[in-house]
Amino acid sequence: MVTRREFMKGSLAAGVAAAAPFSPVQGANDDIRVAVAGINGQGRGLIGEFRDIAGVRVVALCDVDGNVLEREVKKFKGRNEKVEGYGDYRRMLEDKSIDVVAIATPDHWHVPLAAWSVVAGKDVYVEKPLSHTISEGRLLVDLARKHGRMVQHGTQSRSAEGLTEAVEYMRSGELGKIRMAKAINSQLRGPIGRVADSETPAGVNYDMWLGPAPKRPFNRNRYHYKWHWFWDYGTGDTGNDGVHQIDIARWGLGVELPKAVTCSGGQLFYDDDHQTPDTQVATFEYDDVYLMYEMRLWTPYPLEGHDNGNIFYGDKGTMSIGRRGWQVTFKDGKKGPGGGRDGKSHAENFIKAVRSRKAGDLSAGVEEGHYSAGLCHLANIAMRVGRRLRFDTKRERFIGDDQANGYLTKEYRKGYELPSL
Image 1 (spheres, helix red, strand yellow):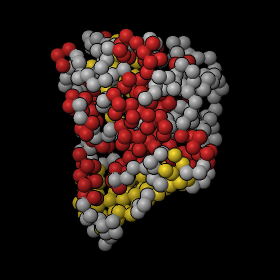
Image 2 (spheres, rainbow, N blue to C red):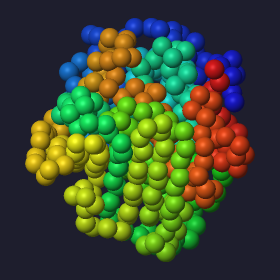
Image 3 (tube, one colour):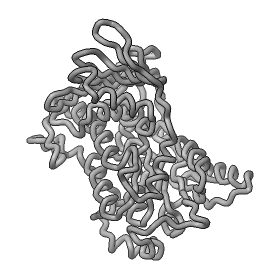
């Protein structure tokens, strides 16, 4: 990994050297100045969410696709708003006036960009999943602590007051002992077909898009959005969508990393360029409770009433959490308490912590993100090696399985290494 000294010698030296790790938020009229990196999909939503918060200004956009960057910068100019456009994140991080970097890049860029942003003295909002591997997720947790930065994970349900009420009810004991939770990801995602490699489109810095990933020819099926389905860049739909339900299940149970994991999966539907599965069933074992995850990407119909949702099974009944809210059903069939999701702005919660400098104000802080992303990685690893794996939760390593441990980290292409502690 690259040391901080080596980093400081590079193109970021001037900007990073002047950014004190524990500096208060700076900005004109006490505005918090936000840069958004990765603006073709979810990043566009983040731009709007941050722009809507009083005292916050989106002042910079960053994307390796010059066509996308030009399109989004034009929108700001059309509103007579000033914004800087960057095709290189390193140039963006040189700007000492930027307080926050919001990241909606492909998964393999989440921690590299977040980590260098933290080292540069920025607070970070990073989309799900927090990481591409378990080891880099732990590195980001440690860097955030060392540099005193606020890092929020994009599992927005944590900012839903209604779901907070649901979790509090479940932990009250009214449903008795909760012995199992199921996270459900059931939907129809169409195939992507088979596409030959081609020339890189004009205006795209493909080498930087690849970043730490292995060098490969450009392919449209590995580019905008479809990168989710390739291991070099994504984590499959478990890390893409299932992470939301896994996070709610883990939140409700009050657990972190499991002591063992089993997972089976494969392609029952796709026959195309997909590498990641369309079907997956995982079980995470804790001392006195199980967390189960089921994913099917070929079902345009719900599972136990949900396309994306959760069921908690207790001695006295169940709690169902879905898109519209939550509902208790007792074992005699009678309905119990329930309510809506009542979501608040996840970005606004993050900005509150940026101002207070209190990590406890974050509804989905970096370590919570690490654990939820970690479950996604554990499921994928168990599926890829094809066996039950025991896990040392303190060392965050598999017990007695070198092959599985090989998936906990990865090689980073020269020039795109991670910072060190």
